[in-house]
Length: 354
Ligand code: ATP
Ligand code: MG
View 1 (tube, protein in one colour):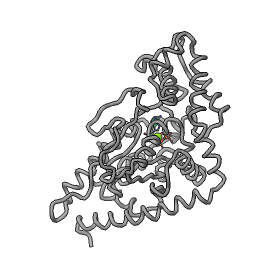
View 2 (cartoon, helix red, strand yellow):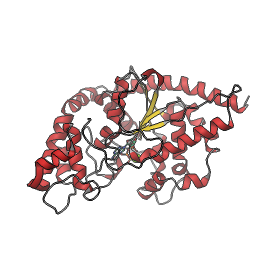
View 3 (cartoon, protein in one colour):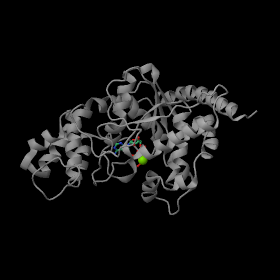
View 4 (cartoon, protein in one colour):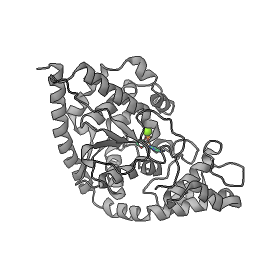
C-alpha cells in the first residue's frame, strides 16, 4: 500500500506516517490493542492491523493487547466478553499475526500492568483528563446515561498498557492520538519525578504510528466503529459485504471524485477500493467517473471481497479450534505477566517503596 494518500491527519509531534521499513527492528518494541466489543472491521485492518503485521514481519517485537477492562468504560456490562475476545484473536491470526512472534493477551489477566495505573493517575490533572477529545467523542457515543469514572481514566489506563512493556511504537488510528499524548506525558512526568539513581529514565516516550488510512469512514460517513453499526467486519461473508456497502451513504453528485474534504462519504468508499487494489484513489475515482454511486459501490464490493478472500478463508479454518485461541491468550498472558512484574518492581523501587 504505497500509492493511496492519507485522509486528513491532525499532526502532532508524535505522529509517524506509514513509515519506511524500520532501520533497526531489534531496537523497537510495539504495543497496540483493541477493545473486545465486536468483530474487527476494515478500519482496523487498514488503520492498524496491517501495520502490525508488517512490523512483526520486519522483526520488531510485538505486543497485542485485548483491552477487556476498557469495554465497561461506555457500557454497563461487557456483553459476550469471552466470545468477542476469542474472535479478536481469530482476526489477528487470520490477518497474519503469529503468536510465536507476537505476544497476544488480555490486560485483565496481567495484574501488575493494572497496578501501574495508580502512580500514573497521580501524574495527570483532572482538567487534562476532562478535555481529552477522544474521551469527549466516546462519551457522546456512549450507551450509558451517566459518564463513569473509568471513562476519564481510560487514557491513563492505556498509558499503563503501553508502558508496562516499555513499548516505543504504537500503531493506532487517528482517534487514538490524544491518548498517545497522555501516554507520552505520563512517561515524561514519571521519568522526571522518579529517575533511577544514576539519572536514567524508566520509560521510553512512545510514538504513534499512523497508516495511510488513519480514520476509515463507515457506511454512515462517521468513523467506522465496532459499536456504531456502520462497519464491514473482516470476517463478513461476501454477500454481507455487498449488502452493507450497498447501504452506504453517498451524495447526489453523479460524477465520482476523490475529495475527502468536501465529499467525505464518496471519498471514503473510493479510498477503500484504493487500499484494496493498492492504487491511488484519484485513479479509481477517474475510472468510475460518471458511473455514479452504484458503480462505485460495485467496485468497492468487488475490491474488498477479492482482497479479503484469502484472509477470510484462513479465518474460517482457524475458527474451528477455539481451544487454540484460548491457548494463545494463555501463553501471551504468561509472557506479559513476567514483563509487567519486572516493570512494577522497577517502578516501586524508584518510588522508594519497600
Ligand atoms: P468501539 O466502537 O467499540 O470503540 P472501534 O471500532 O473504535 O470500537 P477500538 O477497539 O476502539 O475499535 O480501536 C482499536 C484500534 O483500531 C485503535 O488503534 C483505533 O484507532 C483503530 N481504529 C478503530 N477504528 C478505526 C477506523 N475507522 N479507521 C482507522 N483506525 C481505526
Ligand atoms: Mg473505539
